[in-house]
Length: 317
Image 1: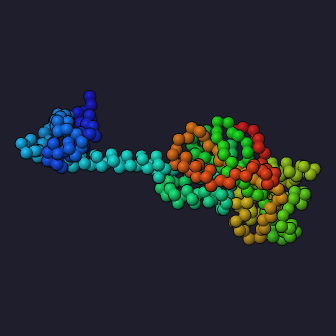
Image 2 (image 1 turned 90 degrees about the vertical axis):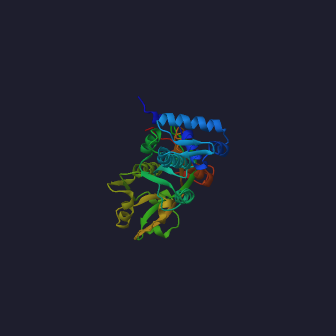
Image 3 (image 1 turned 30 degrees about the vertical axis):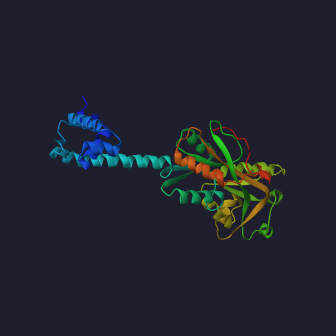
């Protein structure tokens, strides 16, 4: 059976503390906007539940018994604990605290995503941000399971059971050794690259870059020489400097300076990025993050400035 003390309600504690502070049931009731009889009845119920008298009743008011003095300390602690808990929950609901887990597919060295993260961090300093690298299929699977709040994914395709909003786009750049003849040009076209050797990482977005190279160079009747390197994409650019081949990066990555390499844009190649999330996600911190992302986004007509560097449709994961 539950103990009598398990039945104590918060109002019992509030009325008790008010009576102790005012030394009168009548004054406590006036302070709380209640009648004297309501306070008196509630205190009597509390005493019955505890099994001890909390007040001495006098004609001029009330004074605490020894048990009442001991209980007052605990009652105040309980009310304070509940209040702090309510504030914590409210702050989470207002997105002042909490966590947003983000799947990334692009560099955060510069560009829209960097500006978004900085702006959100300034507004919601107590919200933690956790970022996860991976490919779109992995990110979308995690979003459907609500283990990831949002992912920023290239392309314009719609993902089943997910919501999508286009946010920004980036130009596509070729990474060249600084001794390469093509560095003399400010902008390149695919025909300039038809006979080059390329290197891609086995990790994301290596496969997507591989497929895009095959697709674009096949339009010129060429079968590209593409070598897969078993290293992270961060270590891929130094290999370009060593003369192992060329690679592609998005515009945000070009802010990172590596010795021995030069970045050149490919004419007309634009990489669109979208936010993908689950409509079932009720994380308030994430909802604020998404609202800020949409507010900051500049939404040109998709691909109006060039050809997409990714297909709009790929097989479902």
